[in-house]
Image (cartoon, rainbow, N blue to C red; front, side):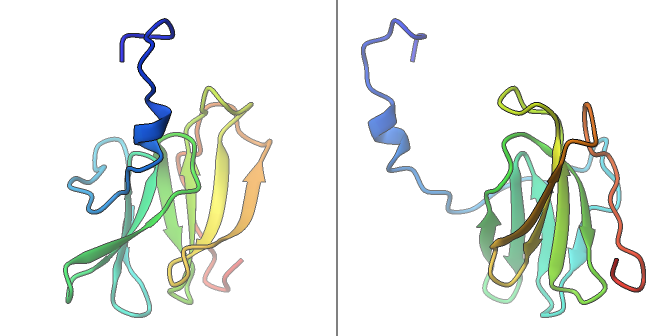
Length: 129
């Protein structure tokens, strides 16, 4: 791809790509961002992807709700619900927090409009709030 004037169609190829396995981990400039879920799987993030890794089957499942790099992650005390925060994307007016299930990988809540550049830390209280 050489820019907007390139006549080749990339949309056709991008529509067929599927993420199979993520090699890597975002450890720089991020802290407390890897947890064990209630079912013993590992939840962490890299780039704009939330990852749930099953070490027994050496497989991963992916949460694709973010539009830019995730820089914070918190796991609810119930070990199932996860919250991830991202940096401001060019597509968004500000960064957002997504709350999602590590079991179904479905988003549960989106929180936005309170941060300007990035959500650098998240946590749940012991009571789960």
